[in-house]
Image (cartoon, rainbow, N blue to C red; front, side, top):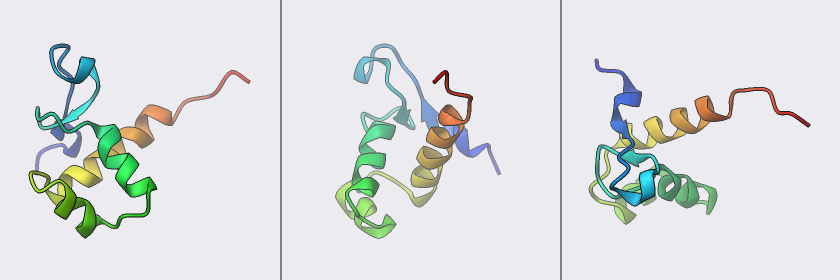
Length: 73
């Protein structure tokens, strides 16, 4: 099985360099926003039919790893 984070791509020429799913113009933030709005995985997949379930997991793992550092408060 390939690394799930291989599903997250960053291309300066797409979406302003923001992290996207598999090179598509679906940003990690788009997936997270739908989940935060209360949609479950099947609803997110219906809303964004080009996604796969593993893409949602990758978006969550990516966000978790990006936030896993000490904060200067």
